[in-house]
Each structure stands twice: as C-alpha cells, then as structure tokens.
Image 1 (cartoon, chains in turn green, brown):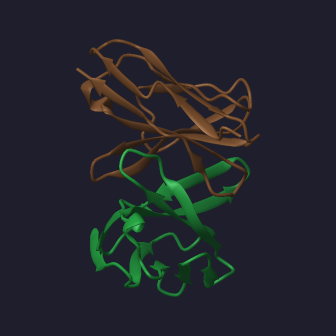
Image 2 (cartoon, one colour; image 1 turned 90 degrees about the horizontal axis):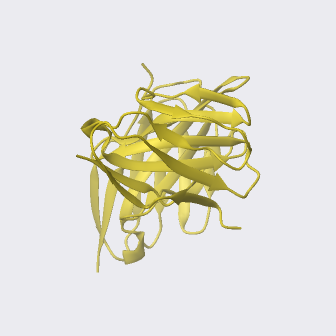
Image 3 (cartoon, chains in turn orange, yellow; image 1 turned 120 degrees about the vertical axis):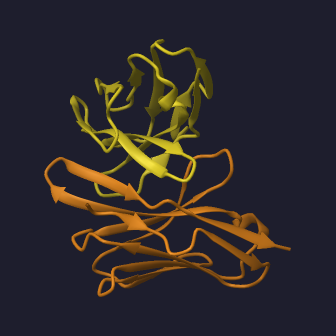
Length: 115
Length: 111
C-alpha cells in the first residue's frame, strides 16, 4: 500500500544551526503535502504546506522542498531555536475526487535543539 | 475563534464500558477527522467526514462509531472499550484539500 515515511527518526542540532528533516512518500498521485510540528502534550500544529505543482515554498524561517521525481519532501528550519524542539510530521493528501479525502501521516522525526 | 475543542482531556475506562469523545469546531470547516496516536505509530485515521450527514472509515475504524449531524460537531463513540484502545485521540477539521487544524487531544486509558 501507499505510505509516507521518514529517513531519520531523531535529529539533534545546535542552537543557531540549520535543520533539515526529510520525508519519503510513495504515492505519486499525492497532490498536497503538509508539515506539522507537535510539542509534548499538544496536538499537531500546521507549519507549512506545498502543492504538487510547486517544488519550493518558503515561510518564516522554514522552507519546504518537494522533489516529485524521487518522491521526496524536506523541511528546512533556519537558525534553529530551542523552541523548535518537537516532533515533526510530514503528511500527504491523495484526493481521488468526490468525497474521498484522506491525509496520511509519517511516523515523525524528533528534533532536539541543544543550547 | 476557539478553533477545535475536545472534551474530555483525560478519561479512564474499564474494559467493556462505552463513552463518547466530543469534538467541536467553530471555523465552519466542512471536513472533520478523528485520529489516534500511539507511541512510534504516528497518527492513524479512524473516521472522517466531508460534510454534515456524511461519514467514512479511515485506516483503523473497528470499535468506533461517528456521526455528523451538524457542521460543528463530530463525536467519536467507543462502543465497548478495550485495552487496545488506550491512546491519545485527536480531532481535526479543515476546508477541502486544506491543512488540518487539530484539537488538543483526549488521553484515554482503558483498564
């Protein structure tokens, strides 16, 4: 079946460094991708999204890159701060039309920022 | 806007008991979903709804029922709780093909 997965389950970086979190997806028909941040004891929080007709999108300190050729998604966080420490999930949406809507999540990457 | 709200925050049940997890959103979102989150498993979709009166099964629907009588509310019912249903449950809502907004979660322990 189709799935979304992550290359690295944990990532530890120094404060001020840039972080890159990777995600592989297997459904070539997926047309929408989202990154979520989940802090301990809280629900996932939307960070940034990208549609399949784009290959890069930038937000505040975050950039998402989409490589459809190799079905790879990445989240780049610039100047990582201690407050960025959390679990990061990628998710893909394969909308087969009509009422079919299902968001599939990866298992998550734990980002730890060392002061 | 309150966003997505969930009640209760915590619940302990005995095996065989039934209960309803409440979820409400005030953003007029058409889509609502229920997920469960288990350690090392990420988020798994239980049931979802694309509008009032319409529900569909997700990845792990067994043991759960849902209904969507209004746009705002999407309760999740556990018919006969089992220890395997111990988990953290998240409700989410969104516009069609948009990012989902998650509630704070309900932590359920089934003894």
